[in-house]
Length: 522
Image 1 (tube, rainbow, N blue to C red):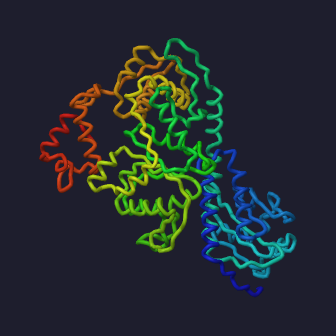
Image 2 (cartoon, rainbow, N blue to C red):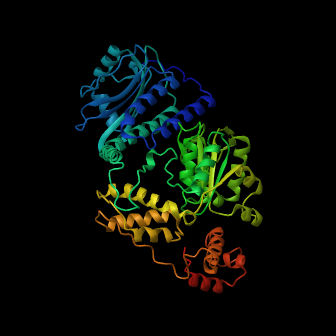
Image 3 (cartoon, helix red, strand yellow):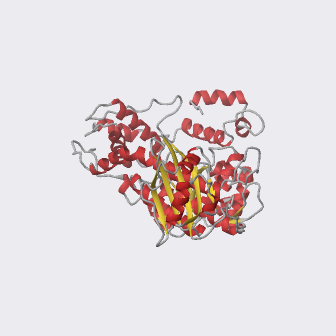
């Protein structure tokens, strides 16, 4: 065995830079089309070679019979030898058996190889490999994949910290390849859908218009009403400024689409828009998701985890349901907005990030500030540029456009064709108040597409909720909205201190009776 060179001490800044690279590579593979997977893996291998100062990096897969390791992707510095597809064959018994057993191979010099690894020693001599690191990876439906890095004509001691980082990266590659294989047929179907744009002809005044949300420059927002045009104009104004944006509006109005429109028109559009829903997780897990954690930060924290703000460094993050952010996390978010700094759970080390924040809420943040449930300084920091997304009931003229956009999207997935919608049906859709907004309209159209064989689409409107009315200005409607808003603010807790009954000045039994009368359900 060759004597081991002492490990090179690498600074925390080196590992931070490498972790950021891994986060950037991981984000690159989110929502990647099947045709982009292979070039993205090769590009990532090049970045790994440059970041680690090695000579070659590669990915391989074992054959179905587990007798050969087939190189599928690789990148080497100019002049460096490259593996052909089946260079590592069944003759390399020690190498293949070790990897198939799930054991990482780490050698500093060919002399480190066991004496019975005759083929492997000859291979290193023929190719000039001195140091080699090979990490086995699980593959869905196949034996294994392998991520390897190598140095030629020089030794390299592989740091213990490097192996788990490269294993995570290799799992990203393996998952991307698996998704590519599964999505090939789906991608072909999507290509056919794009080619069918505008195919159906009109039979009445509500016939399909040539709307393809995926190709509209407004980012998927459908509508021609003054209200929605105002939103789009505001989005265009603020998109390239880098300013923090606060999106206001009821549930289901499309605030996420507006956020994507802003990001898509900004200078950061080449990077992924990271998303986080502040109401989807408990406060302890939400802090980890947003700001990250160190290993051992709490019981069960077995590994370091980067938060979404770190992943979004150089890009933007969409914080949905910002009104649900707990007070203790509001303070951390305010610090990040003001200084561009964060600390992971379990660490006192400051990490600097450059992240644009786009937040959204259906709550009245001013009222929450008055109630002490939302920080006033954070509200002012978020409210640099606010956009109110209008409810669907204020833009009935957009209903036909939305209906046909949803019909086009949903009918193709079911292999159906719809050529017309009866005028009385469309008139009824326009008259309906749509308390669930665009989301509710999409659900109604999806149900109709399922129930109708075509080519004519008949739509059944939702049954009226008890006590509700389509007249937006009615007393019942106003009462229902006010009670529902208070219930949302207290997470639908009726009784006890700080509950909805106390806030409304009612007995709990009276509030429950009124909720039944108005048809209010969680």
